[in-house]
Each structure stands twice: as C-alpha cells, then as structure tokens.
Image (tube, rainbow, N blue to C red; front, side):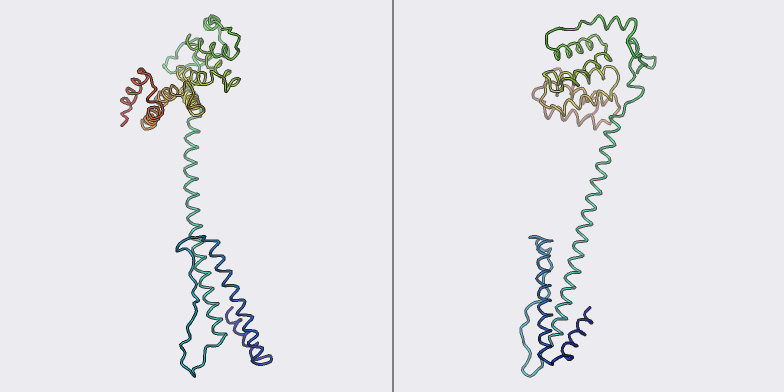
Length: 302
C-alpha cells in the first residue's frame, strides 16, 4: 500500500507540470491523511468513551525543526509515509484491544449459560413426579412397603362412605365453601380428595382471600399423602407468590420437611430454615420455633 502511494506521488511529482503539480498532489494526500487521523480519534472516543488508558495515543506529534541551516529537509513523501505507518500501528493496537474485549464477553456468556443450565436441571428434577412416592393410597390403606399404593379412579366402598360423611359447608360464599370443604377433607385424612378440592380453589380463586391458606394446605395434603415432590412445589410456590400471605411462613416450614422426605442434601434444608428465621423469625409461634430448632439440629445446620 505504501509502495503504491509512493509510486503515485512520484509519478505526480515528475510526470506532470513539475514542482507545482507535485505540491498540489502532496497537499491532497496530506489532507486525506489528516482526515484519516481525525476519524481514527473519533473511533477511539466511540469505542472507549472516557476509558482511562484504553485509547491509543497518537504516535504522530508535532516535530520541532532542529535541522541545521543548509541541510535539506525531509521530503513530503517521507512525512506522509511516516504518518500512514503510524495510522496502521494505531489500527493494529485498537483491533487487539477490541478482540480482547470480545473474548471477555464470550467468557461471561459461557459462564452464565452453564449457571442457567444447572439451575434449570435442578428445577426440572424437583418438578418431575416420582412414580412410587406420588401414588395415591387405596381406601386410605398404606402399601406393604410403607410408602404408597395404587389408587382407583373413584373412591369406592368404605372410602366413598368416608368422603360422603364429610359435610359440605354452605356459607353463601362459594370460594369460602370450597376452601372449607378441602380443609375438612384434610382433617378427615382424605388427602387425595382434599388435594383435588384445594387445586380447584387454586384454579378458581387465585387471588381469593383464602389463596395463601389453600396453597399451603395443598402442600400439606401432598406431604401427608407421601407425595413430597408435589408438596415441595406447592409450598415453594405459596412462599414465592405471596411472601406476605398468612401462610407463607408455614409453607417454608413444611417445605423443609418435604425436602427431608425427598432426601435432599442437608445444606438445602438448612437454607430453607435460614430463610424462615431471616424473614419471619420474629413472628413465628413458639411451637414453630421449637420445630425449626429441632429440624436444624437433625440436619446439623451451622
């Protein structure tokens, strides 16, 4: 590039109209180089706005003429060649800095992607139903293994009679009646029927006055029915959706118990207890405080 520029300037200097034409050509090229230098400084300010130490300092400075009298000065061509070389050096330096910044950005994106993938995997594992633990007991009986048993599509026999024996409230408030019926089914230890009723309340009255109560009781019904994974989801949802709700603290308390049943690491259980004490410690009942202390001791929380 510099050879071509030198050739063009030489041709202009000696091929047309002598010295006057050469000076005109040198002047035009000099103006173009000045424009390039101004544009380079503008790019530096755009790429590194206010970045101390990030901009590339100009390598072309004003030269004080110290040439002794009688010694020929450097040619305009040599001066322009030096300025073009300086511009090329600045471009190379700035390109290297941009590539380093791009590499750092890629590293941050890769780290965030790995964190997101790990978090999604943990949430998916928590939400995946367990085929054994989530089975509904038949007629209220516990399977021989002591964990769970298969359930019929509809209650029958003695269980149907137990369900029919639970009185349906009639207060004139449909939402209140639905919640109270779910509560009475839970009290009667008819946990699958209670969960079904409370799920109906949750769907029909997501912001009803009993919403916090219903979501918490739904989690407890699942927990009492040995469906710890569904219990954990319901209890965690109640706390996160309405941390100021009437049963948000209770949901954190029973969430810790659900994680124990799921055989989660002690560290995860201890974090739930820490959150409970941190957010609601001053308002917990004496009974719940005692339960938290026992739970922390069982898990050897620090």
